[in-house]
Image 1 (tube, rainbow, N blue to C red):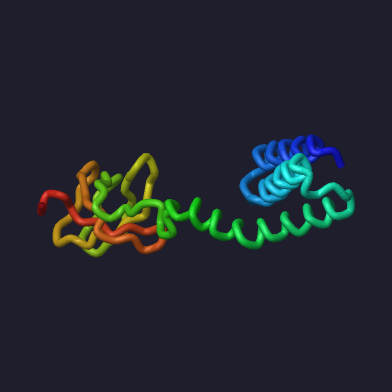
Image 2 (cartoon, rainbow, N blue to C red):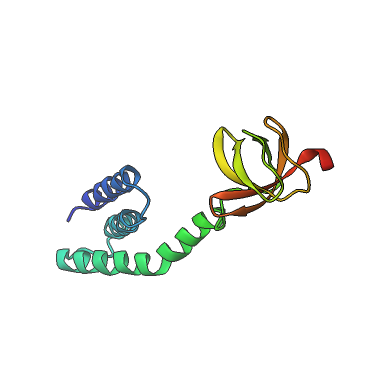
Amino acid sequence: MIWWYWILLGLVLAAVELATPGGFFFIFFAVAAVLLGLLELAGLVTVDWVQWVLFSVLSVVCVALFRKPLLARLRSTERTGPVDSLVGEVAVAAGSIDPGQYGRAELRGSTWSVRNVGDGTIVSGERCRVVAVRGLELDIRPERGH
């Protein structure tokens, strides 16, 4: 194949990688194609079947050696735990809640099931601190104690 065909193939494969959601497969084939185009331009590989075998080998080697470390590096900034913690946030009681009883409270624009773990009754509209998260239920304590 002519050297610039390989370069063009590499650019097309790189564009396909950019157009698809991140799996990082096509980029390694693109790198292999560009490398092969440069090798042919330098006159090091001229036989077509050798070029195709070398393209296949380079592509597989690039995927095997570089995909996992690249994905690990890109995902190293992702949080692996919960996106954020609600403990310490302020909720507003939607109704009166006696100590040890369940009720509803608003937090971040959503209504949550809550349990009053404090010693006193929480009145409607009172600010409360989230002290624990149990699945979709929050334990709250009146903020007045702080």
